[in-house]
Amino acid sequence: MKTRRLKTALFAGTATAMVAAAAMFAPLASAQYDTQEGVTAEVNNIVANPNVVPAPVDWTEPRRHLVELETTELVGQLADGTTYTYWTFNNQVPGPILRVRVGDSVEVRLTNAEDSTMMHNIDFHAATGPGGGAKASLAMPGETKSFIFQALNPGVYVYHCATPMVASHIANGMYGLIVVEPEEGLPPVDREFYVMQGEIYTEEPFGTPGHNTESIEKLLDEDPEYYVFNGAAGALMNTPLEAEVGETVRIFFGVGGPNATSSFHVIGEIFDSVYTMGSLTSEPLTDIQTTTVAPGGAVAVDFKLEVPGDFILVDHALSRAERGLAGILRVTGEENHEIFQPLDGESDLAGH
Image (cartoon, rainbow, N blue to C red; front, side, top):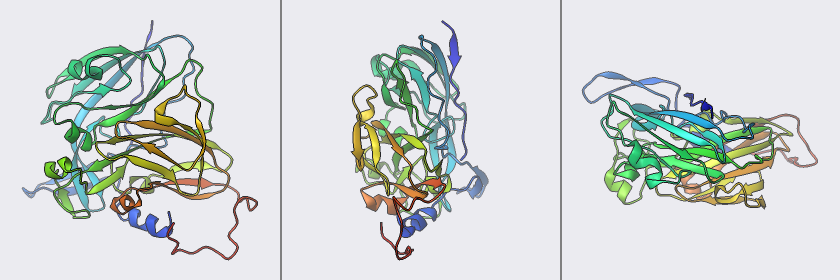
Protein backbone atom coordinates (compact mmCIF):
# COMPACT_ATOMS: atom_id res chain seq x y z
CA MET A 1 0.00 0.00 0.00
CA LYS A 2 1.45 3.35 -0.99
CA THR A 3 1.65 6.16 1.53
CA ARG A 4 0.04 9.40 0.43
CA ARG A 5 1.15 12.63 2.09
CA LEU A 6 -1.89 14.72 3.01
CA LYS A 7 -1.38 18.39 2.23
CA THR A 8 -1.46 20.51 5.38
CA ALA A 9 -0.57 23.87 3.89
CA LEU A 10 -0.62 26.97 6.08
CA PHE A 11 -3.09 29.65 5.20
CA ALA A 12 -2.86 33.27 6.28
CA GLY A 13 -5.07 34.58 6.61
CA THR A 14 -26.68 40.10 9.33
CA ALA A 15 -27.53 43.32 8.88
CA THR A 16 -25.19 46.14 8.10
CA ALA A 17 -24.94 46.93 11.81
CA MET A 18 -23.84 43.38 12.61
CA VAL A 19 -21.35 43.39 9.74
CA ALA A 20 -19.88 46.69 10.88
CA ALA A 21 -19.59 45.53 14.47
CA ALA A 22 -17.73 42.37 13.51
CA ALA A 23 -15.54 44.18 10.99
CA MET A 24 -14.20 46.38 13.78
CA PHE A 25 -12.42 43.28 15.08
CA ALA A 26 -11.21 41.86 11.75
CA PRO A 27 -7.60 40.66 12.04
CA LEU A 28 -4.83 42.11 9.93
CA ALA A 29 -2.50 39.97 7.79
CA SER A 30 0.46 40.80 10.02
CA ALA A 31 1.43 43.33 12.62
CA GLN A 32 3.68 43.91 15.62
CA TYR A 33 3.05 44.35 19.32
CA ASP A 34 5.01 45.60 22.30
CA THR A 35 5.62 43.07 25.04
CA GLN A 36 5.56 43.94 28.72
CA GLU A 37 9.35 44.04 28.54
CA GLY A 38 9.14 46.75 25.85
CA VAL A 39 10.34 44.44 23.05
CA THR A 40 8.57 44.65 19.69
CA ALA A 41 7.48 41.18 18.53
CA GLU A 42 5.82 39.79 15.42
CA VAL A 43 2.07 39.21 15.31
CA ASN A 44 0.93 36.31 13.15
CA ASN A 45 -2.30 35.88 11.23
CA ILE A 46 -3.49 32.52 12.53
CA VAL A 47 -6.83 32.54 10.64
CA ALA A 48 -7.38 29.42 8.52
CA ASN A 49 -8.64 30.34 5.06
CA PRO A 50 -12.20 28.98 4.83
CA ASN A 51 -11.99 28.68 1.03
CA VAL A 52 -9.21 26.07 1.07
CA VAL A 53 -10.44 22.48 1.38
CA PRO A 54 -8.77 19.28 0.11
CA ALA A 55 -10.30 17.88 -3.09
CA PRO A 56 -12.94 15.15 -2.78
CA VAL A 57 -11.77 11.55 -2.62
CA ASP A 58 -11.10 10.14 -6.11
CA TRP A 59 -9.70 6.70 -5.20
CA THR A 60 -11.58 3.43 -4.70
CA GLU A 61 -9.05 1.26 -2.85
CA PRO A 62 -7.65 1.77 0.67
CA ARG A 63 -4.65 4.08 0.90
CA ARG A 64 -2.15 4.98 3.58
CA HIS A 65 -1.75 8.69 4.29
CA LEU A 66 1.01 10.54 6.09
CA VAL A 67 -0.20 13.52 8.14
CA GLU A 68 2.55 15.76 9.48
CA LEU A 69 1.45 18.29 12.08
CA GLU A 70 3.49 20.72 14.16
CA THR A 71 2.22 22.15 17.41
CA THR A 72 3.27 25.77 17.85
CA GLU A 73 2.75 28.56 20.37
CA LEU A 74 2.73 31.99 18.80
CA VAL A 75 1.29 35.49 19.15
CA GLY A 76 -1.61 36.15 16.82
CA GLN A 77 -4.07 38.94 16.23
CA LEU A 78 -7.26 38.25 18.15
CA ALA A 79 -8.98 41.51 17.16
CA ASP A 80 -8.05 44.91 15.77
CA GLY A 81 -5.43 46.21 18.22
CA THR A 82 -5.60 43.08 20.39
CA THR A 83 -3.15 40.18 20.43
CA TYR A 84 -3.18 36.80 22.13
CA THR A 85 -0.84 33.82 22.49
CA TYR A 86 -2.38 30.96 20.51
CA TRP A 87 -1.48 27.28 20.62
CA THR A 88 -1.95 25.82 17.15
CA PHE A 89 -1.59 22.95 14.74
CA ASN A 90 0.57 24.21 11.83
CA ASN A 91 0.32 27.88 12.84
CA GLN A 92 -3.40 28.21 12.09
CA VAL A 93 -6.78 28.04 13.80
CA PRO A 94 -8.43 25.74 13.19
CA GLY A 95 -5.70 23.28 12.22
CA PRO A 96 -5.64 21.96 8.65
CA ILE A 97 -8.72 20.12 7.44
CA LEU A 98 -7.85 16.54 6.49
CA ARG A 99 -9.69 14.25 4.07
CA VAL A 100 -9.56 10.46 3.64
CA ARG A 101 -11.80 7.56 2.57
CA VAL A 102 -13.30 4.98 4.92
CA GLY A 103 -10.89 2.07 5.21
CA ASP A 104 -7.81 4.24 4.65
CA SER A 105 -4.92 4.16 7.11
CA VAL A 106 -3.70 7.45 8.56
CA GLU A 107 -0.17 7.77 9.92
CA VAL A 108 0.04 10.81 12.18
CA ARG A 109 3.45 12.36 12.82
CA LEU A 110 3.16 15.08 15.46
CA THR A 111 6.11 17.37 16.19
CA ASN A 112 6.05 19.74 19.15
CA ALA A 113 8.08 22.84 18.25
CA GLU A 114 11.34 23.27 20.15
CA ASP A 115 10.31 26.66 21.51
CA SER A 116 7.01 25.41 22.94
CA THR A 117 6.46 25.87 26.65
CA MET A 118 3.95 23.02 26.95
CA MET A 119 3.58 19.35 26.09
CA HIS A 120 1.06 18.78 23.28
CA ASN A 121 -0.64 15.82 21.62
CA ILE A 122 -3.63 15.01 19.41
CA ASP A 123 -6.91 13.15 19.86
CA PHE A 124 -8.70 12.18 16.63
CA HIS A 125 -12.41 11.54 17.15
CA ALA A 126 -12.18 9.53 13.90
CA ALA A 127 -9.70 7.08 15.46
CA THR A 128 -10.66 3.87 17.24
CA GLY A 129 -7.97 3.42 19.90
CA PRO A 130 -6.98 4.66 23.38
CA GLY A 131 -7.44 8.40 23.64
CA GLY A 132 -7.86 8.73 19.88
CA GLY A 133 -4.06 8.72 19.75
CA ALA A 134 -3.55 11.13 22.63
CA LYS A 135 -1.27 8.87 24.69
CA ALA A 136 0.73 7.75 21.67
CA SER A 137 1.34 11.32 20.49
CA LEU A 138 2.18 13.15 23.74
CA ALA A 139 5.31 15.12 22.84
CA MET A 140 7.63 17.28 24.87
CA PRO A 141 9.03 20.43 23.21
CA GLY A 142 11.32 19.32 20.38
CA GLU A 143 9.93 15.77 20.26
CA THR A 144 8.13 13.96 17.43
CA LYS A 145 5.62 11.19 18.18
CA SER A 146 3.76 8.99 15.69
CA PHE A 147 0.86 6.55 15.51
CA ILE A 148 -1.34 5.04 12.82
CA PHE A 149 -5.07 4.39 12.76
CA GLN A 150 -7.56 3.01 10.28
CA ALA A 151 -10.54 5.20 9.45
CA LEU A 152 -13.32 2.73 10.21
CA ASN A 153 -16.32 5.06 10.15
CA PRO A 154 -17.36 7.69 7.62
CA GLY A 155 -18.18 11.13 8.97
CA VAL A 156 -16.98 14.64 9.77
CA TYR A 157 -14.87 14.43 12.92
CA VAL A 158 -13.11 16.84 15.26
CA TYR A 159 -9.49 16.45 16.30
CA HIS A 160 -7.93 18.40 19.18
CA CYS A 161 -5.08 18.52 21.66
CA ALA A 162 -5.84 16.41 24.72
CA THR A 163 -3.03 17.42 27.06
CA PRO A 164 -4.25 18.48 30.53
CA MET A 165 -5.72 21.00 31.07
CA VAL A 166 -7.53 19.87 27.91
CA ALA A 167 -10.03 22.73 27.87
CA SER A 168 -7.20 25.26 27.97
CA HIS A 169 -5.35 23.69 25.03
CA ILE A 170 -8.56 23.67 22.98
CA ALA A 171 -9.56 27.22 23.91
CA ASN A 172 -6.12 28.43 22.84
CA GLY A 173 -6.74 27.11 19.32
CA MET A 174 -5.81 23.43 19.16
CA TYR A 175 -8.64 21.85 17.16
CA GLY A 176 -9.51 20.93 13.58
CA LEU A 177 -11.56 18.60 11.36
CA ILE A 178 -10.99 15.38 9.44
CA VAL A 179 -13.50 14.28 6.81
CA VAL A 180 -13.79 10.51 6.30
CA GLU A 181 -15.74 9.98 3.09
CA PRO A 182 -17.92 6.90 2.61
CA GLU A 183 -16.92 4.37 -0.04
CA GLU A 184 -19.26 5.93 -2.60
CA GLY A 185 -18.04 9.45 -1.83
CA LEU A 186 -20.20 12.52 -1.29
CA PRO A 187 -22.67 14.18 -3.67
CA PRO A 188 -20.71 16.60 -5.85
CA VAL A 189 -20.92 20.33 -5.16
CA ASP A 190 -19.31 23.36 -6.81
CA ARG A 191 -17.42 24.68 -3.77
CA GLU A 192 -16.58 23.57 -0.26
CA PHE A 193 -15.67 25.61 2.80
CA TYR A 194 -14.09 25.01 6.21
CA VAL A 195 -15.37 26.85 9.30
CA MET A 196 -14.97 26.13 13.00
CA GLN A 197 -16.29 27.94 16.05
CA GLY A 198 -14.45 28.45 19.32
CA GLU A 199 -14.24 30.57 22.44
CA ILE A 200 -11.37 32.56 23.90
CA TYR A 201 -11.13 33.38 27.60
CA THR A 202 -9.07 36.47 28.39
CA GLU A 203 -8.35 38.15 31.71
CA GLU A 204 -9.01 41.48 29.99
CA PRO A 205 -12.56 42.54 29.00
CA PHE A 206 -13.65 42.14 25.39
CA GLY A 207 -12.11 44.76 23.11
CA THR A 208 -9.20 45.64 25.43
CA PRO A 209 -6.27 46.75 23.23
CA GLY A 210 -2.78 45.33 23.63
CA HIS A 211 -1.67 41.82 24.46
CA ASN A 212 -4.36 39.81 26.26
CA THR A 213 -3.75 36.82 28.53
CA GLU A 214 -5.70 33.64 29.27
CA SER A 215 -8.07 33.49 32.24
CA ILE A 216 -8.36 30.01 33.71
CA GLU A 217 -11.06 31.25 36.09
CA LYS A 218 -13.28 32.39 33.20
CA LEU A 219 -12.53 29.16 31.35
CA LEU A 220 -13.72 27.08 34.31
CA ASP A 221 -16.77 29.33 34.66
CA GLU A 222 -17.46 28.92 30.90
CA ASP A 223 -17.55 32.71 30.55
CA PRO A 224 -15.61 33.65 27.38
CA GLU A 225 -14.77 37.20 26.36
CA TYR A 226 -14.60 36.28 22.66
CA TYR A 227 -16.49 33.94 20.35
CA VAL A 228 -14.69 33.26 17.09
CA PHE A 229 -14.97 31.65 13.69
CA ASN A 230 -11.56 30.38 12.50
CA GLY A 231 -9.67 31.71 15.46
CA ALA A 232 -10.16 35.47 15.61
CA ALA A 233 -12.93 38.02 16.15
CA GLY A 234 -14.54 38.88 12.83
CA ALA A 235 -12.01 36.71 10.99
CA LEU A 236 -14.43 35.64 8.27
CA MET A 237 -15.49 39.22 7.63
CA ASN A 238 -11.93 39.95 6.55
CA THR A 239 -11.50 36.59 4.79
CA PRO A 240 -15.01 35.79 3.52
CA LEU A 241 -16.26 32.60 1.95
CA GLU A 242 -16.55 33.31 -1.81
CA ALA A 243 -18.95 31.77 -4.34
CA GLU A 244 -21.17 32.58 -7.33
CA VAL A 245 -24.90 32.56 -8.05
CA GLY A 246 -26.07 29.19 -9.32
CA GLU A 247 -23.45 27.20 -7.43
CA THR A 248 -24.18 24.56 -4.83
CA VAL A 249 -21.85 24.89 -1.85
CA ARG A 250 -20.95 22.75 1.14
CA ILE A 251 -19.70 23.99 4.49
CA PHE A 252 -17.83 21.61 6.76
CA PHE A 253 -18.56 23.18 10.14
CA GLY A 254 -17.29 22.10 13.53
CA VAL A 255 -17.16 23.37 17.09
CA GLY A 256 -13.82 23.24 18.85
CA GLY A 257 -15.38 24.86 21.87
CA PRO A 258 -14.39 23.88 24.41
CA ASN A 259 -17.72 24.67 26.05
CA ALA A 260 -20.39 26.41 23.97
CA THR A 261 -22.89 24.70 21.67
CA SER A 262 -23.50 26.46 18.34
CA SER A 263 -26.80 27.17 16.61
CA PHE A 264 -25.24 27.52 13.16
CA HIS A 265 -27.24 29.67 10.74
CA VAL A 266 -26.60 31.54 7.49
CA ILE A 267 -28.81 34.63 7.40
CA GLY A 268 -30.83 34.72 4.18
CA GLU A 269 -30.23 31.08 3.24
CA ILE A 270 -31.81 27.69 3.96
CA PHE A 271 -29.74 24.51 4.14
CA ASP A 272 -30.93 22.11 1.43
CA SER A 273 -29.17 19.17 3.09
CA VAL A 274 -27.80 18.81 6.61
CA TYR A 275 -25.58 15.86 7.49
CA THR A 276 -26.63 15.86 11.12
CA MET A 277 -23.95 15.32 13.76
CA GLY A 278 -21.44 14.85 10.96
CA SER A 279 -22.93 11.54 9.80
CA LEU A 280 -22.26 11.03 6.08
CA THR A 281 -24.17 7.76 5.80
CA SER A 282 -27.48 8.73 7.44
CA GLU A 283 -30.11 10.31 5.21
CA PRO A 284 -29.52 14.07 5.43
CA LEU A 285 -32.21 16.36 6.77
CA THR A 286 -33.63 18.80 4.22
CA ASP A 287 -34.82 22.43 4.28
CA ILE A 288 -33.21 23.37 7.59
CA GLN A 289 -32.87 26.95 8.90
CA THR A 290 -30.50 26.36 11.84
CA THR A 291 -28.50 23.33 12.92
CA THR A 292 -27.20 22.58 16.40
CA VAL A 293 -23.56 21.52 16.80
CA ALA A 294 -22.16 20.52 20.18
CA PRO A 295 -18.58 21.13 21.36
CA GLY A 296 -16.44 18.42 19.82
CA GLY A 297 -19.08 17.91 17.12
CA ALA A 298 -19.39 18.73 13.45
CA VAL A 299 -21.79 18.91 10.53
CA ALA A 300 -21.81 19.33 6.77
CA VAL A 301 -24.44 21.54 5.14
CA ASP A 302 -25.22 21.88 1.40
CA PHE A 303 -27.25 24.62 -0.25
CA LYS A 304 -27.71 26.24 -3.65
CA LEU A 305 -27.04 29.95 -4.10
CA GLU A 306 -29.94 31.61 -5.90
CA VAL A 307 -29.21 35.32 -5.52
CA PRO A 308 -26.12 37.51 -4.98
CA GLY A 309 -25.16 39.38 -1.83
CA ASP A 310 -23.39 39.08 1.49
CA PHE A 311 -24.88 36.25 3.55
CA ILE A 312 -23.89 36.38 7.20
CA LEU A 313 -22.71 33.32 9.10
CA VAL A 314 -23.76 33.39 12.76
CA ASP A 315 -24.42 31.35 15.81
CA HIS A 316 -28.09 32.23 16.34
CA ALA A 317 -27.33 32.84 19.99
CA LEU A 318 -26.91 36.31 18.51
CA SER A 319 -25.37 38.08 21.47
CA ARG A 320 -22.21 36.24 20.47
CA ALA A 321 -22.03 38.29 17.27
CA GLU A 322 -21.28 41.28 19.49
CA ARG A 323 -18.24 39.39 20.78
CA GLY A 324 -16.74 38.69 17.36
CA LEU A 325 -18.78 35.76 16.05
CA ALA A 326 -19.88 36.63 12.50
CA GLY A 327 -18.63 35.89 9.01
CA ILE A 328 -19.55 36.54 5.39
CA LEU A 329 -20.45 34.24 2.51
CA ARG A 330 -19.95 36.62 -0.44
CA VAL A 331 -21.98 35.59 -3.49
CA THR A 332 -21.48 37.36 -6.82
CA GLY A 333 -23.57 37.13 -9.98
CA GLU A 334 -26.78 38.29 -11.57
CA GLU A 335 -29.85 39.30 -9.60
CA ASN A 336 -32.90 37.04 -9.73
CA HIS A 337 -35.91 39.23 -9.01
CA GLU A 338 -38.27 36.27 -9.22
CA ILE A 339 -36.71 35.00 -6.00
CA PHE A 340 -35.86 38.23 -4.19
CA GLN A 341 -36.47 41.89 -4.98
CA PRO A 342 -36.55 44.90 -2.63
CA LEU A 343 -39.60 46.98 -3.52
CA ASP A 344 -38.72 50.15 -1.61
CA GLY A 345 -34.93 50.03 -1.48
CA GLU A 346 -32.79 48.61 1.30
CA SER A 347 -31.94 50.16 4.66
CA ASP A 348 -28.51 50.22 6.23
CA LEU A 349 -30.19 50.15 9.64
CA ALA A 350 -31.86 46.73 9.33
CA GLY A 351 -31.32 44.60 12.41
CA HIS A 352 -31.42 41.16 10.82
